[in-house]
Amino acid sequence: MRRYTTPWLEDVLVTLFREAGASEEVSRTTSSILIEGDLLGHHTHGVKLANGYLKDLKSGHARGDASLLESRQISPVAAAYDGHYILGPYLVQKALEQSADAARTSGIGIVSIKRSHHIACLASYLKPFVDQGLMPIIMTSDPAVKSVAPYGGLDPVYTPNPIAMGIPSRIQPIMLDVSMSTVTNGSVAKARAEGSRLDHPVILSNQGVVSDNPEDYFTDPLGSILPLGGREFGHKGFAMGLMVEALTSALGGFGRKDDPSGWGASVTVMVIDPALFAGSSDFLDETDHLVEACLQAKPVDPERPVRLPGQSGLRRRTEFLDQGIPLPGEVVAELRSAIEDSSLKGTLDV
View 1 (cartoon, rainbow, N blue to C red):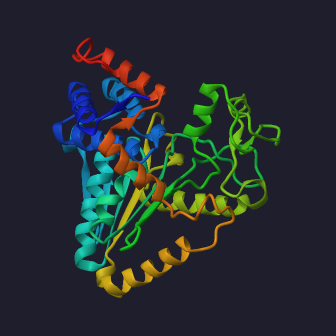
View 2: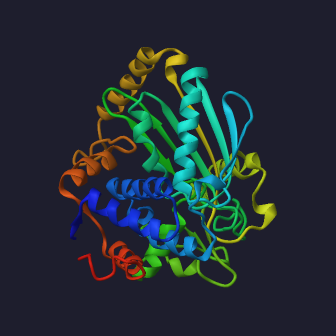
View 3: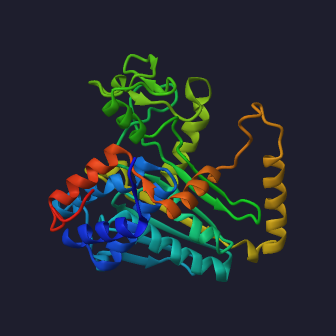
């Protein structure tokens, strides 16, 4: 695959977002977060999303004007945003920064966001805050989409509802980004587009048959994605999915009961400053001990040693910053499509 440098991608994306009506700040923040997704290897939730964001900006479903954000301060540590479908990366980044400021003073900060546009890859937000010794936490759901059925049921009710968290360590930071379903919507759509099977039987057909065929999801009526834990232990993923629903849509007061349409997100972010609890040194002593114990654990397969959540992504990030990002063909195709509708058409070799 051809490699693309981060500065080149950022110049292209910022130009595209600006021409679609987004402000400079919203354009730069959104571009940075999308590129970070590809730097970490999450190509389904990186630059590939830009074309969809641009189409929503042009149709009016997504907004690019930061002044539309309504922010209500609830307490010194808590705030609530009505995002009015401003591009999600801008809203989440702003909420994390506000939460971090509160955490440095009070130990914790929290912001609830309703009516955000799509927020891209959750892991993309973590590193800057972890590097400051903070613990960022992000949860999201999309009240306009139903793809996961409750455990024991057939009808899809909610979304994969991921949780991301960054945990500082002197040895190796822990950066997790985990859906409360077995796989994501994007993974199922990608397999279908490629005409391939999924790696595991994670789809439940509308007849209650477990399958690895993405076509069993795209039926009428729809199939569903199994909760995290699958058929055997999906009651745990189901419970966690409900937790995310409560901490996002319910906390923000806007969700499935409102029957929204179009790409969107309900989001809650938190930031914790360990310095105001046991203290940074004691905190890092403990996480270092845990990290070292995990990394030194005897592996099941000697060729595949234990690795921490986020470890491979950070390794890719270092390589890709140095050598460029190898974008898969479908990502390049989406980027080319976006460029075709802009002033950049015919000026770039993509």
